[in-house]
Figure 1 (cartoon, rainbow, N blue to C red):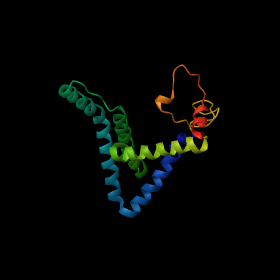
Figure 2 (figure 1 turned 90 degrees about the horizontal axis):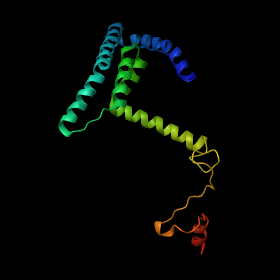
Figure 3 (figure 1 turned 120 degrees about the vertical axis):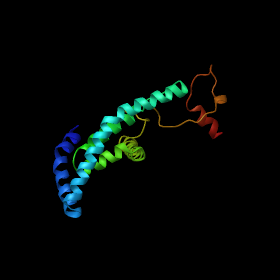
Figure 4 (figure 1 turned 90 degrees about the vertical axis):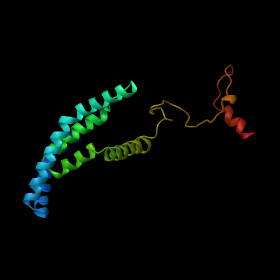
Length: 166
């Protein structure tokens, strides 16, 4: 939460610097046109994201008898529209990532890969230790066929190792 509040407080300064640089590189008129165009596009996306998803789901229900709404896609389009509505190249880039499905999947995949790396590397993996999400264990993985497991037999996790070593 602290990172998000720091980002929100620092964002206007970064946007102002980027707008000045954009104006110097492309000219005032092009920069102004960019701000107005992305603002109009963002307002249009925010206004149409929900109703178009509802209409698409209704058409699907009429055609197949069942339908569903992509809630994450609708929320991403709304938030992306909000980002596009705000003036500045950085928020425009974030908005573009959110409203484009391919870029949204790519960014989410990169974020998810980073989170998985953090879980596996920094926190010691998915289990095996007493603090892992799957509780304590001896850290070994046992690969067994269903034929090797019998219902009446008491569980001995080391039996498979002994059978393999014979």
